[in-house]
Structure formats: C-alpha cells, structure tokens
Length: 125
View (cartoon, rainbow, N blue to C red):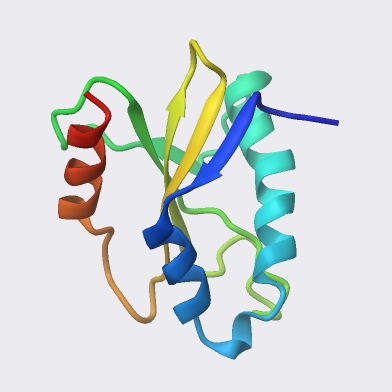
C-alpha cells in the first residue's frame, strides 16, 4: 500500500542516516513506520498529535517544510516517541510528495541545518 505518491530522500539525508551511530540500528525500519503512521495521520487524516510542526521562521512558502519531533526509535529503549531523533522534510500537497531533507539526533546536534533547508528550497524554484 502506497501512502504518498512519492517519498524521496536527498543525498544529504542518506549521508545523515549513515552517520548516525550504530545504537540506532532499527532506524531504517523506524523511518518506514514513521512515514506510514505519523506522516499519514498528520497529512492525510489531519490528526495532529503535536509531533509534527511546520517550520515557519524560514520565510519559505512553498514547499512547506516540517519538523517531526515525535519519532519512535526502538533502539532507544524507554524513550518511546520522545527519542530525540528529528526529521526535517518537505511536503508538496498538490503532488502528494514527500522529500526527506535531514535527520539528526538531538543529543548530537541541537537544531536543524537551516542553511541546508534554504539551499534545498532555492533549488526547487
């Protein structure tokens, strides 16, 4: 079953996934679950559990950029959805398309790479 018409990953996102420590060995499966469950609830069913937020301080109107703060990583036992893993992505509602921009662990890095997001958005125009 396809949730979105397209889900793609930027090369930088792929590098982020590879850089994350081995303690996140379930990350690839957890990411798939996140897309199928959390993103589906938020974008398709319009159910907001306060885990996904639109980043509005970038002054970018299209595409809409989102930050996921609730990401359940099974490798981080006892943390549940408050694992500290963050995902930054663009959602193109008219195309029903998701592009994964950045993934990071809050223990390694405090905030998203705003320069990367702005570069990405400039490339979409």
